[in-house]
Length: 219
Length: 136
Image (cartoon, rainbow over all chains, first blue to last red; front, side, top):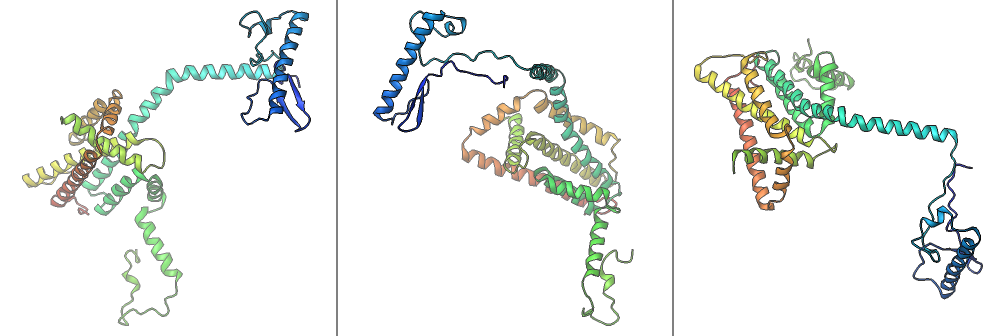
């Protein structure tokens, strides 16, 4: 696993055998720690300081350790070193380059085209809706549809501004059902009339067929 | 209260309405603009109907006629001036939000009254000058 970033710069600690916990230098010390834990922590700090001094004395101060030091003297134990550079695999590098290219391209696009398209949609949406209402009124005024249809379309269109699924369902039914929403209503009435049993129905006078009272039945 | 402020307040109330009953977290301003356009269109159509009643004639409303194109261009131009040219309407919304609650409740009732008046006016004018298929 050479792709993993290994940060062992601040790994100086001592295991606590009594509580089987592990105190690591650089961690935030809890306020409710016992005296033994505080002593272990202090010992860890001292140990790291001594070890760092010994390390600097033997190997000298290399580049990675001098960046975080503000000046000469012992290294601050609470400061963590930056992660070491790890050599990534070939596929990681290729994927990283592709990601960078895609990000740059989308950044460029966002300044050129996308905002204009959003602006056009913001203007075109209300105008399209408005022209639809005007077409409906024109058909109403010239007698192509009756008033019932016009008011139904207008009211359901207005409801659809707030609750879109109602309007979408009505418009799909009205546009794609053969005969429109009115014929769908009649067909549903006919289907439901045939579904239930009428053998015991009372139709008034014997010569009253009753069934012809449904509008559109004899169409 | 200038006419500009009244117009923006009408827009603001419908904006808040669609924000209150939203299913999708977007398009409040577009929906409010649609409502404004339809209300203005209703006023113009009722004027046409009253004109026909006064002249004792019956004319039809076609899409490709000057009766549609002139109000359409006017309405879209007003929308462009007020909402699409810049984002000045957002400042108005912030300003109306800072008003007191009592003022906004009064404004809500005024806007409801104006809307119902315009719709009732349009229905009444359609009743006076019914189309061929009947007014309802």
